[in-house]
Length: 291
Length: 291
Image (cartoon, rainbow over all chains, first blue to last red; front, top):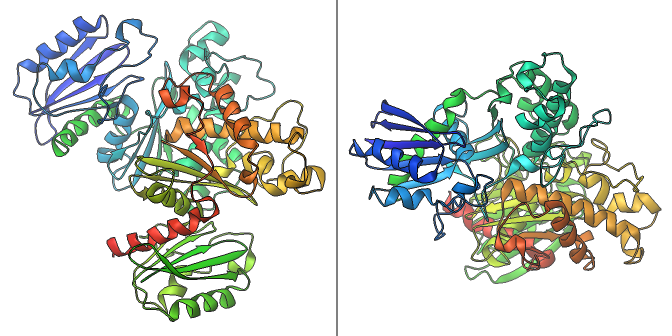
């Protein structure tokens, strides 16, 4: 059996699964004090003979396996979690291979292995929810370098009529500062899903997401672009995002997929909100390969 | 012996080299009618027993080896070269493994193997000259997906005082439309290198390049970012570009390299204008591996 953890900012979803990828047991643990959350996590897996563990976690986190800080949560606004090392906390109890990646890289991997990326060479996955972040999987490997990508903070061009100053403490009106859930809420004082589908904010949000997707497309040229997270559950956004992508690309890339209607290119993940957990399961398998 | 071609928009630089990477012969052929240029190229290599050929070419070009159009120049403004297949043209004369990539991916690979990327996991290389394009090499492989990256066309935010409308036929004031050589020339009617180093245009250009580098950093997280091409030969630009990068990143990424002075992070390529040819030499070696 193997273990997988989707370590989110509000909850840890843990699963035990067999070599046919069948989930045998699962538990959801609130993300509170690191000691409490980690000890509940350990307790859950302790009931099983686990051969490896995969973790897709919130960040920023050190995901370079060659770093002595591998698995350490870095300068997160969640003060209690700062400098908590998830890898070491697990390794202290389970002497098995453990692989740590970001939640969004895990989701990209999950869709690559068993979702809309099946049969494709690369998958871009972006979550638009409390924050905005993206991951990228290519030929079964996820992307990292000096650090892991932080694509949520790219700069978009605000629409002239949109006078919202943005909500990102570092960059004001970067992508996350304009389209994350809290940014939408900060505009009107109510949550986005309570605004009607015909509210003008969705035109703005779709335009900014479309701009960002064009830039990620020009940079990574992924074979599919998936949008998950709370904001992406607003299904009516997808046609607007595809239209904004077309508008901003302005026909520059001449490729049959990009010349088409984009319905099979810019999509909600096949595994929906489970993409991250499924990806973490594949991380557990990869942990064994790279042991 | 092996062959390498840096196929540029104005000239083809061809080299024959041995298994110690020593160049034994080289020739420069003007890029004119494809038949003439390709037959001169073939003639040059015909004098040698070539085991493989690597090509770093101007684009757009199909670089997916699984495509039946592998090696074909796509919708380039150079009308005569449109739909010319460099791979097939070479393969018809030399029955050896041939690998085709973009000039900028080749340059990134060249620096990864034998330049400022030596010992690093990934290299970002951008040329700023007649056009703007970038390549990326990670763990010895270059990046491609649906197409090859077209990073020159990302959107930057024009500075309020800068009233230049941009020079890109598709996106007006995208990065290439604002900082490529012809864009600088279009502003004042004279070539950039004839403008003084204290001309305000360099502040604009450096700011836009800095913005773009922040976005590429947030997306790819490369271990080094190299800037080649004609505009990048303006050495005085580098301190301004590093300052613009810092300003726009605004401390968001907390990493020792990014917290430093960036002098060893944002740089002119070690191999200068030879980066593309050296990368094409390594493509020739890779062609043999993947035969």
